Length: 351
Image (cartoon, rainbow, N blue to C red; front, top):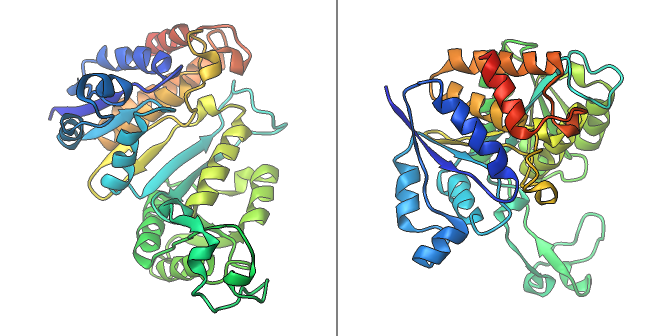
């Protein structure tokens, strides 16, 4: 069955990775149709808005969206893909294979995935002046004084809901079964300090774990986990955590491998998903054709698996591994001198 993918190339250096990878995909003659909704500055220039109705309709009619990376007005489309499409689970794999220039002495065996709750926590973005909370008489557990006595300042709301937590933790357990690695889920929170919010996330996670007894479950305080992720990353399988910790630690996990140019990402909802390499737009190297395309290639692999092309996704992953093993067509961030397009071509040659 023909699948339609909406493609948004992104900003700065992102299109330099997207275009050759898209060409590689098109050369596979798979039943995939690509459409290009106009968003961001081009849409502002032609339609007066960064995210016109036609772009929304294009995304809604597609089976998935492939998004490069944005640092500008095309972020309006990203907001819709995330909150408008309720893509609640941000999946960030972290797997080492030979040839990757990891800073670790012994990176062999690193193969875990962070599942970040993608919609809640501090990212509900309810902020304001502390004076707006003067009505709160409840004293802080540490300050022992009400908000109005703290002085001039600002606040941010951290919101953890039962529905949001249950669905992302269930997703993590299902992913652990699908991966068939260690069959383990680890929950990461700061429940010792944030007893009501993070404590609730852990409470709900424990409830979900009780009805998923075939999968091992444990939990760590976030700062303890951060240390363990660096010291013993091989012990982890699927790690689920609230939004902010997932945002920070998934990038840190990319550092274990040695480059955000290796950081693939997929954001999944109940009936839609979008896929975005997590390397950012890399404006410092824009126009140089040296951005590492691995994150984009692996993100496309995640998308193709989601769309039902698992065999191609597996072949693509093996081709990437082969190029790293050969070591002759790697970009500068991985110690090579190949261009972005040359590295993609090397993967295409293996395919």
